[in-house]
Length: 117
Figure (tube, rainbow, N blue to C red):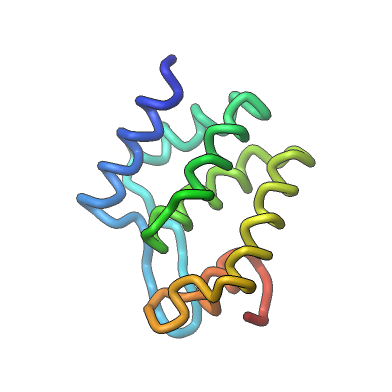
């Protein structure tokens, strides 16, 4: 599998049909079957996927894509994936990414199981 192409396909699919339910109470990942399978396939690569997901998070300019990459990292579940999530959370807070948007930092942190921005 060409991982970079797979991530591109996931991003395209997520932009076409956002896989999230967004409410003031939080965000739920609700992918269609194809995106769910793609996410699971990437997550199954474990740490092999973490480096590319980290690169995607470093350059992401869309909160929905950030959520997709974070969700995928959660599914990887390794210490390296967790460290990548923590690095993004720190950046989210320091740079106040999407502070005036919805979803913004609060919703992303809630999605990650945290209750404070």
